[in-house]
Length: 419
Image (cartoon, rainbow, N blue to C red; front, side, top):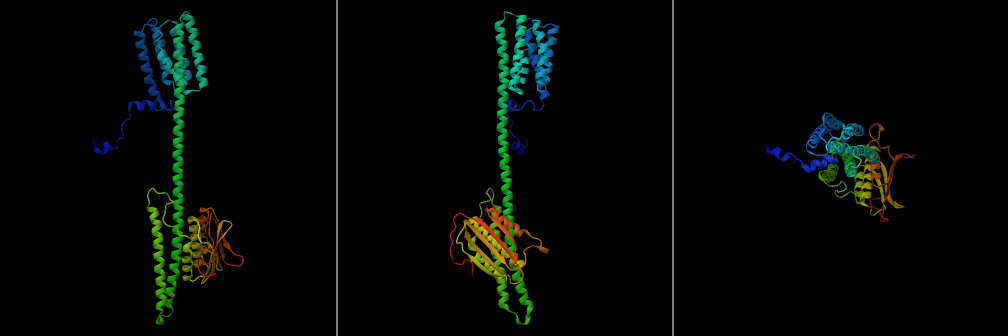
């Protein structure tokens, strides 16, 4: 045998496992049920023949008796499809068989199989009514053929009741197993849906992080590169080397900062088997002065007022990203040297964020909104807050966000620069 096949082939189930699997399986949907029932009918007919020949319980069947005995076993092939109809056909064959005083033990097994099938595939009410009908017919036949056979009546009645209750028990057991399987499948579907939801949320979070990081960084690099290019092209004879060097240093510092944030995001992506909440240090309120300074280096005239000392990490990160995206939009779309005011303060248990400029409306090409505003709203919603953004009547654009917090300290000093 191929060693690979030997290690990958699943072990065959034991006989006990196969028997329990057959019992647990719904008889109405079991595979190959007609073929299996045909084999069962042949086996029961052979057993009935042996009993009729060897067991002394009435006279040995004659030609008519053999015909009725074998005819009673043929409907067993369809016992799962039409159990009640099969029972009626079997009783029609068995009743004259017993009336002619043929061997009474021979057809017992086939009859009990049909009774079991009726009980295992039907309701309790139908089973009890069927059992009463069968017992009634049996009592009538016994009264006609053997009026003094009290023990025979008890024996037959006991077999009938035993097989009916066995079928009822198996039916309830199958329902119990099916309920357990259904609950397990439902739990598995719930876990799969939860996993898909977490993956979708993590993808959305990473998309927001990458957008905020790359858009902010590329915008700053573009502005700083434009400054260096302007200085180089304005007057080559009187080159301001100090200004060019400063612009290049600013570009290098921006790239280093972006590389650090990008490395943190990629580290999260590489983690295996760790929930999405497990991640590196989140940017927070302490990073706002750097955002303000970067916007100033890009040419914006920024006034900042930060009257919040600390906030929950998730809220601080959301506020940081909202301010970052808002300043990026200002530098990109609000024109040369735009005036912008950044305010953060606590009011009524919420962190209020406001970024206001006097330039044009942020957006993509041809005024079409990009992903920035969508990302800012998602940032606010991720911590249970709200965000509004739009043009001001007096001109310019304003972004305001309300982010709920639990306990936030406040101070009266400026956290980012001018006030």
